[in-house]
Image 1 (cartoon, rainbow, N blue to C red):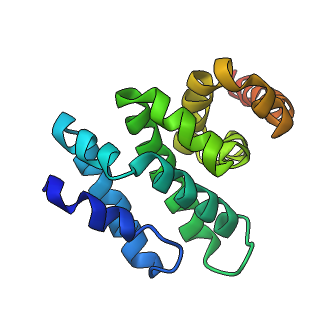
Image 2 (cartoon, rainbow, N blue to C red):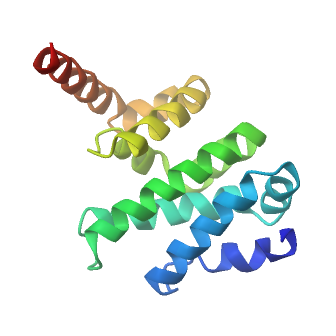
Length: 161
């Protein structure tokens, strides 16, 4: 239930076993599907915790610091999905968390992933954050990444027609 929010968020630390992080992310996703769960997670600091988890998962996905890159990609996708859910409940909390944790580069990097769902979630989150953080998006390589993503989409469309 919602009383488990702090414990679940604690399992997202990079020191926790990878399997524990994945399970915690799935449970957090379930909690976020209810208004009461979302409020409990926000009160427990979900926005910042998820941003830190995204930074860690993105690094693992890129092969930095060891770890299973495929698991890192899965964790990054689950985490960005959770951040999108939190953003729909409290965009200001996510905006502060992204700024406080310097998570913008990780969000921008996900716009270039091959995982369509993660890419879509990252773009949706960026569209919400960008008006207030345009300079940070640009500084994180956001313009180049978005152009690359759009170019890839145009190429994919050409191949399918």
